[in-house]
Length: 518
View 1 (tube, helix red, strand yellow):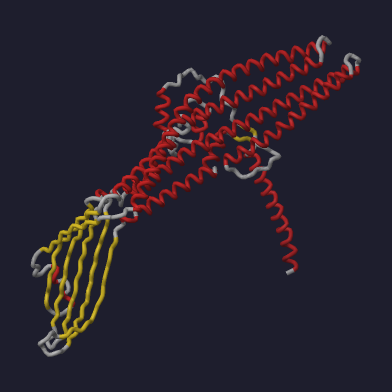
View 2 (cartoon, rainbow, N blue to C red):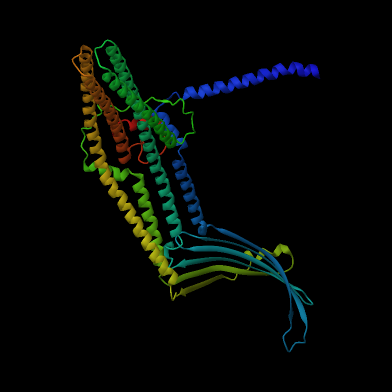
């Protein structure tokens, strides 16, 4: 046993080492997989893991359950009955008082269903075998087949009341599905904006590092000039102060990058990653060369109102409220129902269970029929009046909600178009300012080295260049956000109207749409 353990120990040690190395390799693979992150990856992760989208999907399932529950009144029911009884009867005067037993065996089957037009239909089949225990026993079997039909003529005519909850639930389920489609567009927009914010924070960090490097070179050059008695120590102090301010800017932008990554990770719904190694953004800003020459006419607004899923969901909720309001109005009417019953009965005398089915097809005397009108006149109608007031207020609320959504769309679409045009022009001016300020910095550095310019002029030129670079990044971000926002407002983020998944609706196509104009 000791020898076996001695040989087993190296094997266990090697297994442990391999396991550790395997875990380390897996961590390196996961880290390498997140060295960069693209807009396509952001879209895919958002549609897969975003918690708001999951909640919207759960709401669709809840609405589907409500729809199934609302259809319960129209479920058919099958009833089966089997029973037996024994009773004693006495002879009537003036016959001598005596008694005899009456035994019965009954079988019955019925089926009933309420239709969505308010009709209720129910066939019924019964068979009863009776035995009268007298001196000469008497046995006979009775059977009947009937079809019952009930039709509302006033209150629930056409199923106005009984079918209204299901109609409202069906409209609610459709509205929930459209809300989910709108939520898809919303979370993709939020993730796209968070991605552009992250890319902008990354670019700001690059600018701040470059600014710090320029300040470092200026401080080193100034120190060399001070040692050569070509500059005063006051210039060195100013250069070092400028370097310290650039370091502070770089630290602040590093914090801003962490905050931007936090917002992007939250928007995607991804799990936490080590903050020491943040992935680099792989998708660049959309270029300002995208043309915005097209004019925002009324056709864009009309197309958007026909395409937006949130507006369609609001319209479905209006339809649901209308159905419930009509049902509440019909509750004010008297109840007048027409009840019809038709069938036949048969009787067969004789003993034996084999004769139980004979009356169904032997010696049938004729057809039985019954017609009834049942009238119900409600007096106070307190509950019906309350439900009518509640339904009317709910219908008005849904109408106002739909009108508000449409109003916002008609306002937001033209503003999104004009904002995109303005951001494009601002981006062009920012790019031109960067070119000019870069020339100014180069010029001031040459003059400073030649002794014909002051350190303050160099610092001011570098500050202006840094500001222009940051303005350019903000312009790029604003233009990218404007493109994505326009896609959202015009409901063109997804290839089809409401963002359903299809063969052509890939994450790449969605990412492409977020960086291109409609």
